[in-house]
Length: 336
Image: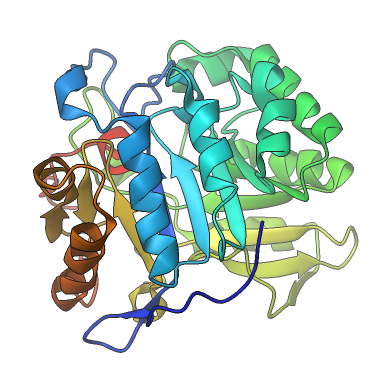
């Protein structure tokens, strides 16, 4: 990918934050039903409401021309979208794009890892909430741990520059595996990131108030076995990182509740139906699908809409686990 700086002025919001990172959701569908993400029975968006891959490629181009240097493809599970590799190939050729990355549950990686690397994906994040097959299936409701581990191994062979494991610790569910996940990552020279559960959408049969594990508690448990050293390294997103002295493993903590990261937010999201979300935890948004379909194939109206949207990017989110979710969209509809 060409790393030349784009000519257009950068995207700066009213709080002086420079947006250089976009998370683009290519589908709300997923082959898992993880308990912290969605209900077991879900109704997904009809095809007519979903952006085409060509529209998504145009959105990616518009953002990069406006100074965005990192695009992350998310979902749902991105790799269940038909012909999605063509989108990666298009985005990977964009002049000025420094990083094309992917967040996946790993279920389809064994089939697609080599092609993704060839298309220009440099780094991937794989969700891995348990190393115990029966527990993994209980958390994902339908997933196979063996299939995900096979995908992770395929990603290693494909030669990605970095592989990061994402885990959501939940009290009484998988919080006894924190050290196991650290060791798994250390043995393979992966980064591991622990994410505080977020109150997006109501989940049947799952109480986030009792399952929530704060990042400080996760860090304390890791510190019982390892020495965590401060570092200025980061993963390009909101994670606060430390490095384990004994293994060299980079450990990240994403803490939307306990260590709010809004002051340094450099990100926006685009949902699979073309809604530009200015904040994960707020509803401020702009309908890019309307712009795309009013001006088919036109780049300038799209860029104008994106620039104008910076004026409504809020200062931050206000998550509250003690209250009912005020955001009814689940994470799969938000773009993880």
